[in-house]
Length: 308
Image 1 (cartoon, rainbow, N blue to C red):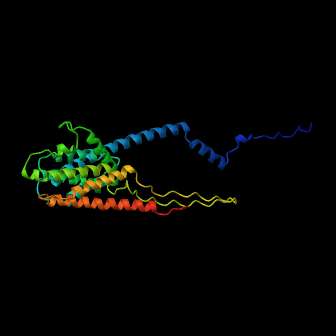
Image 2 (cartoon, rainbow, N blue to C red; image 1 turned 180 degrees about the vertical axis):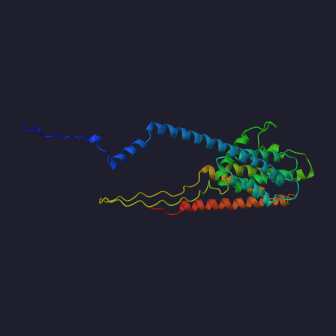
Image 3 (cartoon, one colour; image 1 turned 60 degrees about the vertical axis):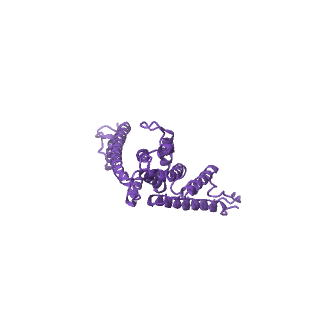
């Protein structure tokens, strides 16, 4: 019929047509995306390798730094606690206390320091004993805040533990006062007892700035956006004071510390010298800080607050 004699048209399927630039681009992108399972496996392996490498490097640096710090501390501590009439030099105190600001609070710095100080406290000469106490006092009052809690805990733990060499508990006052009976040692024995009681109590009870009594101010919170609801808003309840009163335990500790300070600061006949003078001076500085912290805490609690 009608189709006879006509040339049959050739139908070219769509798939055989040349791909457009857009289609080729999609195909390239699709082929370039890696398999999700491969990504997960590679990422997991990379994280494990990075974690292992970081841990190894951190341990290596920590070990080397601790070794260097321990060796340097040993030398400075030896100079600071010499058995002579010259009081502890400021540069030695600054170097010893300065280490606490160089080492991260994640590292246990005071376990080694306290053992070294205790070893010096057991020497016979009273001047080495009082200088060792003074260094411990300065660690407590001026050490880095990141290490303050660690210092308190470590001293408490050691006072419950026994020294393998002496078989006695660390920082035992009786053992501390024991030594060669000489005229000088006998003359300053009572002061050493009073000062040791104060320092041990201060280290175990309070940090340098007495934040247990008056914590640092917290930054004010940003005001929340007002609600768009047209319904009447209820008045906000009164907010409590920003800083509650210190606990009874903390106040009792402050009372005991003041009593101990009042006894240690009284120098009897024959006890006046440069080494005892700098110890009393440091106790007086503590009392200023303690009374200031109490005043700040009371002022915060008595201050009117919202809703009152």
